[in-house]
Amino acid sequence: MRVGLLTSSRADYGIYKPLLRELSSDSFFDLDLIVFGTHLSERYGYTVREIEADGFNIGYRAETAPVRDTPAAVAESMALTINSFARLWESSHFDIVIALGDRYEMFAAVSSLVPFNIPVAHIHGGETTLGAIDNAFRHSITHFSSLHFASCEQYKKRIIELTGSEDNVFNAGALSMDMMKDTVIMSAEEFREAFGFDLLSPFILMTFHPETVAGERNKEYVKELEEALRALKRYNILITMPNADPLGLFIREAFQRLSAELPNVNCVENLGTRGYFTCLKYCSMMLGNSSSGFTEALYYDKPVINTGERQLGRIVTPNIFNCQVKREDILNSVKLAEKYVAGSATNIYGDGHSAEFIAEKIKDFFQKQVL
Image (cartoon, rainbow, N blue to C red; front, side, top):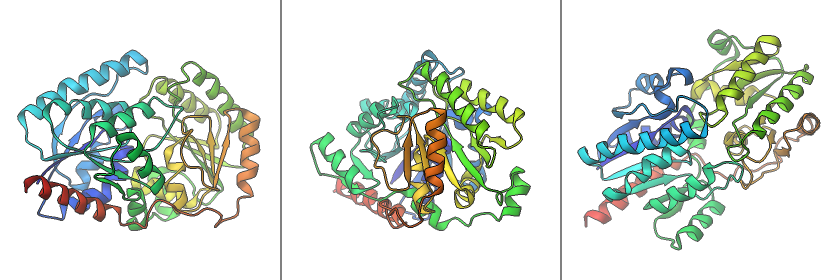
């Protein structure tokens, strides 16, 4: 079975890894990775190197990352993705293409498949993020897809509502649970040698992406975040950099300036999967608006301060403290997070066997098509 897997960033690749291993180890599948987006951008860490180091077969590369952080640049990147992939689908045969998530570049890649009638298997559909343009892209990918793998039962039900059908809609759990179960985290000394950061001092792991429906308000959010971080002198702050979204460059440059000014604030472009999970294990709490605060944080039962509305609509478990992107709200939420009682939240995203389940369902789908 010829399988193409779309990966556009460090975020989706880290989630995919258990499935990549499962598909690669089964001779039934002939797997090609289709690499595009920020993977091939030096500005965003040229993370294709991680894929190459892991030894997975890259069948196609397309340089499609936006060169600026404006709405026009994003639209141009989407158009470039569609044009690049039209040539790929025309010249290559795939029995199915796997897509994960909700990014604009993933939407562009999947939409280019539609005229070719190539089936799509979509992972992480049914979720809601009202504070991001990704919400529309995610639901559109759901409508383009033939096979659906939700991360929990509630999201499975939403996919059924969207499509009007229960056919080929599954609660597979979250692949990140597989990845975290199987990943041997780094020791504090290993991490210090790799990243120059002390995990043994209390620290906050922070990722803040633009609210892509908020426009220029993101600039005000950055000011409020900066003021909150200035007040959090009792913690070290480790910031992973934002996505390639409108105003993403503005946000990253602001954090880089703050890091140069404050000794307890540190920025890193890419921790890699193992490094990121290690930080989750050791951190006192998470801060920002990353989706990992809603899934991966549950594995290590970490409190999460979720700022603003980017993730509005996701399931809120007891370890998550929502607040506005305001200095005082953030600082008050830190105090609440410090009082979080471990064990209060239950992991609703599976038992760490999602990759095996997804691979079997893809195989079943193909065999039914052939028959």
